[in-house]
Length: 268
Image (cartoon, rainbow, N blue to C red):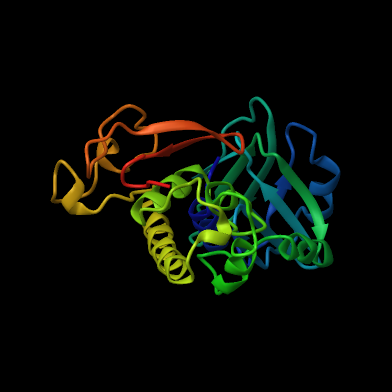
């Protein structure tokens, strides 16, 4: 599932390509047809994100998208390709130079036309977003009162918006925190350091378009960009030696997703 940095980047790209211009909106698949007709030809005001949610405002009407596990956007310039498959929503616009731009949405968990009030209801049930101006103390207030493991709490979008499986595993490793530690046992100074680190990692993810969490000194090649094989400490490295201590990385399912951790560096 795309994590918060992906949605932030998508929002920025779509805003730059379409905002302030009339957008031709269609639903070749048919599932979004009636909503598309309501906003077709209207000016797009802005595209924003919060966590894993995308919001595109056409006046008082807002297109809300949640990609889920299988949702994906593809975009391009010039004439769009012939619609194929389950193409939920297509945008077409003039672009900045008149060449034309388009973007297609497939497979999203949610693609709905909602009101500003309904947007606020969604935001009210989400936790702070590390990529937005939001208060980390709001998240800690929930964490510090909970007996639920920190590994599960980090995946709860009501606690923090935008964290997914990769950031969960890597953030906990970088701070030597066991995913099985109860939230109420997490020290405030540890949380403060984790939040600051998360902000840095997710901003880097926006810039790079991918998640890299290893420090240069912990990579095979210590200069240049991280390769696919050395971008993470524990994520998807089951049975492989920990980059710091050599202990085999372990995995088990937690809140429906595979959790990865080092039992030595992240001792309970």
